[in-house]
Amino acid sequence: MVVKIANNFRVTNGRKNPDRKSFGDILEERNYLTLNAKLLAWGIFLIFFVENGTLGLIPKQFYFVYRNMRISDFLLYSLTAYALFNVKEYSYLYHSRAILLPKILLVYFLFQFVMSSLLYDYNFIELFFRLKGIWMCFLIFPFLLLIKRRALGYLIKIMLPVAIVSNILYILSAVTGIAFLPDIGISEQNLPGGLKVFRVYGGTFYGELFFLGFIYQWMTKKFRVYQLFLVILFIVPHILAFGRSAWVYFTLTIIIMLVWYALKKKEFRLAVRQIVIMSILVVGLVYSFTKFVPQSDYLFEAIEARVSQGQEDVKYKEGTFGTRLANIGALLTLWQNSNIFIGIGMHPLWVVKPETVEENIYAWGFSDVGWASVLTAYGLIGFILAIIFQMYYFMITIKVLRKAVYNDLLVFFSLVFLSRLFFDTVINYSYSGLSVGLWGFFSITFYIAALAYKYENLEGKYEL
Image 1 (cartoon, helix red, strand yellow):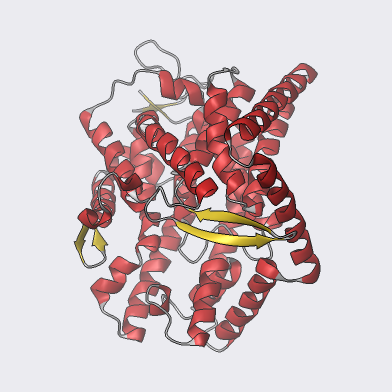
Image 2: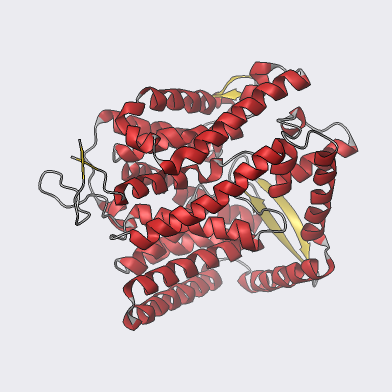
């Protein structure tokens, strides 16, 4: 039964709206959930757990069922089918305007898959399983069902221990150059001034979301000293990763959260409080970095060198920046020489090792460039859909943030989503430009689901 309640409260056994949860509240509360809600949360968790290397607790060969088909693949397809089978349970979310564009894109991806299978005469079943990155977008339906069953907090709690362990192992890998995590990449990079550092790719298991989540709680609810350790733990790996775009993204997201909350409350005292909290975080981070990270002085110099290197790359169009610009040119040429409306489709070189120099250039470009890869792969139709996706979610996210009454967890994910949209569009424009990429919208699937639930919630739809 759905009713409208003017004061934005949800009545459940005499309690106020259970959506009113801060990030810390979610981790500390005792949830009384149905078995099917918990099993759904565990299923989603295991998909990401397997896909992220499983911390090496179990040899990865045990996760393979046949050739490149893993247990996580079958979990993904099973949960998608299960969520669609139970669509009546969250029908008002499934039919929400906030989900319309993702459903259109999913239909277009299925069309592209069929066309590509016929065009390239590649084994239908094998190509299907190799394109798992695309099919991860279908997780939007299990996510909607998860949120509807109020198991989001349960999923976060079972993810937290893995995030803690993986971040500790990541730090050890970054400072020693020894892979303490399976399925991570480690390379030695030369920086200006003769400095050399180890760069580690992958392995933090969503620590960045816990980092931002705790900061969001400090701003909107209460600062808790014991959480400072976790926040520092979750941000140090991203400092040691020497990823300049990640540094900018985290800074942007924190600024957006600060500005949003300050404008919402319109109190100078709150702005001062936020500045004090951020100062405590910076002091704690610097202290921890210098006291507990080996060769911290050397790493500080390396961070400074990495920043200056990025400035030089942009100025002279060299390094990573120059390579991405060249990749854009190569992909645009490929698009112009193919079907400009539907692109080249899901080419097997995405998932099979390139065999020629030309294929290697294209494969690298597809994996490293955003808007150009969408245009080349999915043509003008897919590119226009991705642009509409970007603009529409800008508007709907701002609307939700403007109308939100409570600073709950779904508002946090909406803020992170807004930051991601802004970052991809404006700051990362030279090689991203869009949040929909070669592998669809799988990296923001959960944000869309959370936003849709909050959007319908603010429209006055409540379940009794």
